[in-house]
View 1 (cartoon, rainbow, N blue to C red):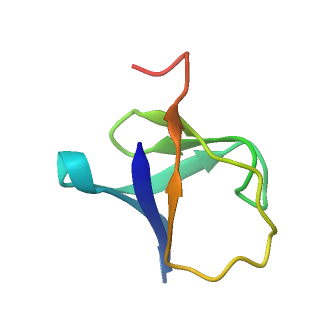
View 2 (view 1 turned 90 degrees about the horizontal axis):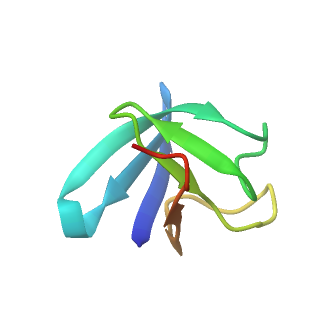
View 3 (view 1 turned 90 degrees about the vertical axis):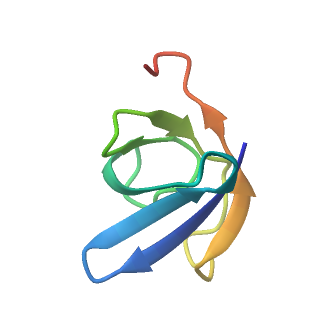
Length: 70
């Protein structure tokens, strides 16, 4: 699914256009965010593709729902 990741003063946020859903990131597998899973405030877990740590935000990427997600 396509998601847009942005950053604000409180941390990272994810917007899912098809669901008209915006949630903050509450946990990450890797400190640099990319190439692992992220947890969202609504309980979803998404897998992100590997990318360079210095990617400019906001960015729209293809993410997948993690197999262990709700």
